[in-house]
Amino acid sequence: MITKKTILLTVCMVLVSSVLFAKQYKMKPDSKAMMEHRQQMMAEMQAMDKALDEKVARMNAATGEDRLPAAIDVINEFVSQHKVMREKMMRINEQEMMRMQEHMGEGMPEKSMMQKEAEPVVPQE
Image 1: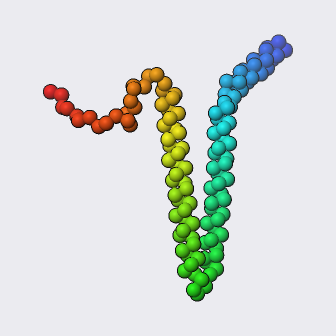
Image 2 (image 1 turned 90 degrees about the vertical axis):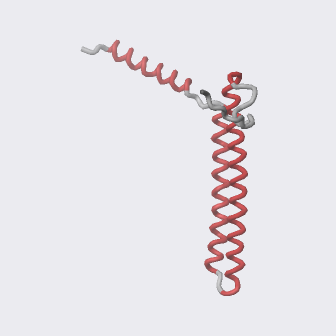
């Protein structure tokens, strides 16, 4: 038979373990900044999509001689956005590589694998 003490003890254990779990997995300041950065990037991408959609709509609505300049405008916008996104991707990749190297810390050799010059491979006999 389950007693009131057992139920109370079980409830207390669940509450304590929930609090400990929440503290352990509390969002770190780095994670918070990363989430804000991600949200900012998503907003920028949505704005880029909207700008491209508007130009495509103008191109589709254009007739006659206005159609070619509208198509050129769409292409130029697409190329511009592609370059911006590529630059951002490269910057993020560099930051991730730096973070990984910092995380690995002192265990890293003086030069990382990427920094080393290609050394000739000598087959062992």
